[in-house]
Each structure stands twice: as C-alpha cells, then as structure tokens.
Length: 334
Image (tube, rainbow, N blue to C red; front, side, top):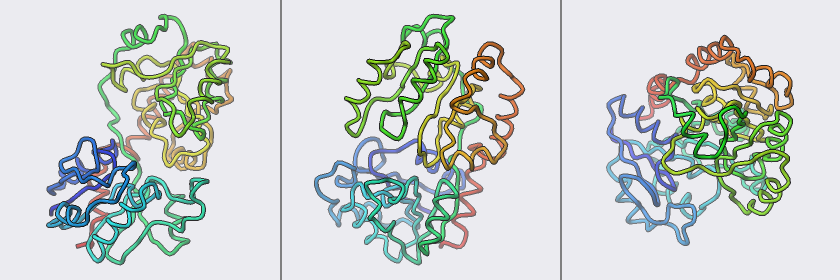
C-alpha cells in the first residue's frame, strides 16, 4: 500500500515513528509538510501560513495514495484553511486522522466543535480521555499511545554538564519542555529550590511567555539554565540530569514521562489527567511535592524501581509494538 503522511511543520518525532512502523509493515510512505524536512513540501500547510495550500498542488501531493495519515493537522484549529483543504481533498478516501490534541482541550478553542470526520476515515488518539471525548461527540476513535525506543543510546553526562556550567556534585533538575503557561515553570522551579538543585529548562518560551519566563528565572532562588547547547542530543540531556520534572497542568501524553524511564531517571510529576492513564500500566513516579522522597532517591538511587518502570513501559509503550498496533487500526480500512 502507498501512504502519504501529512503534517504542518516538518516531520515530528511521532510522525517519524509512524512512518517507520508503516514501512515495517511493507508500505510505501511519502511524508508531506508545509515546511521543514519532508519528502514533499506543500506551501500553505505550515502553521504560520498566510494562505491555504493551492488545491491543485495539494491534490498532486496526495494523489495516488491508498491512504493518507493526517498528523494533528485537523485536530487543533491552528491553520483552519489548510485543515479544510485537506479534509475536502480526502472526502470519501481512506484516511487516518491522528490527534495529539483536540480543540476543547485548549481554553482559546472551547467554542470549536471538533475535528472533521467522514465515513471513510479512522480517528486515532494518543490517550483514552480524548477517545472518550470524541465518542461523546459521535466520533469513534482508537487509542494508540506514543511509543518509544526504551533501550536508547546513553548520553555523555560529564560533557553535557560542563557545557551548561553545572559542577560534578550538584543536583540537576531537568525540565525537558518548552516554556508556555500550561507547563507551569514556577512549580518546577520551586521543586529545584526545595532540593537545593540547579534547574534546567531545555526549551525556550513560546506563545508570548518570554516576559513571564524572564520574571520567574530572575527571581529564582537556585541556579537556572535555559536552552539546549548545540551539538548535544536529548540523550545527553537525560544523562546530565538527576531528577526529571513534569509539572504540566495538561499534556496530551507527556513524552518526558516515558523518556525518563528509558534513560533510568526519577520523574517528579503533577497528576494531570492523562498521567493516570500512563501510571495505570504499572509505572511509579514521584509526586511533585515529594521533596524528601526525591532527595533520598538522589542520595541513594533505587535501581529496582527504575528497572521495574522500564519493564512495565516495555509492555505498553515500546516502539517495537507500534507496527502491529497500526496494522490493527488499518484493518478493513481499504
């Protein structure tokens, strides 16, 4: 079968995993995006596009495909013109709409009813909550969790810490997110302060959050680092860390949770709604307020806990499971 995998701003990490899984099933995959790295670039699909894509160009890019996977483009109304054009082009054609987020999960989009749908399409969500919310709106959906390489290559702890100016014996709390309000940088900073640790926010500010981030970092009572030095990888980030923090009030999934497991680091998390779904698979994380427990873990790591988390994650979220799960989604679609 021939697939087109369509996105907005280049091939995301999750889209790349789906492309890999489809190829493992023997399918031909062509990636399409409005900008960035993709097999085919169609201007107008990008989130910041000033006009929707040319319909003839879009038709040419999608033509000949047995199935089109729409990666989050028709989920949030960030580029309504592109979403409408893609939905119209795919009317009556086999397609999978992969939803990371849905409109009513963002305060600014509460008035939006939901994603487009068609009898020829399948909807896939990354959590059960979204699938339930779609079902209440008359749209059946299948849950396919985000999947991960759970035996990744290890990073360089010493080089990474030297690059961001963290001494060898210091405790480093890593916050591997971008800075927007729902990530709650303030709570992550307070955790680092209570631990007497250096705080490192890996991503930069977005959505106008820069002034508030400057205020938070400027008043921090602990050392703070911001941004990712060039030449390093996410493996280096986790290798440098002693504690990973996920203080978000909302995540569609929360990749840092499973990444912390893959790199064998303790996670301090807020119990946002989807976190309960992740922990239901047998994973054990620290509460964001469990400062004494975290401090004890840093001083004497519990390797049994780390290994038990890894074993549980391999049953639910290992990348090797993704091809079979996508095969089940596609069954009967053609």
